[in-house]
Length: 65
Image (cartoon, rainbow, N blue to C red; front, side, top):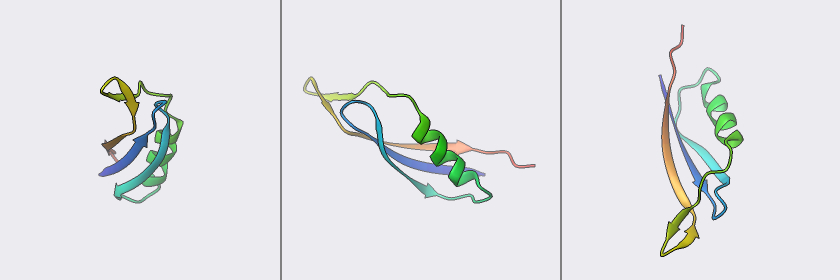
């Protein structure tokens, strides 16, 4: 199954918000949120040479047995 998550990085590259946009259940949604919140800082996005907030969508594939 797949879980899709949307998250926002601030001007310092930190995750400031995340939400599930496609659910799977079975605890997978909670695990994706947990891991996204633990990510180290990213390099911030830049526009015109200045750091800006950036929104990402990421799909995580799970194989459940």
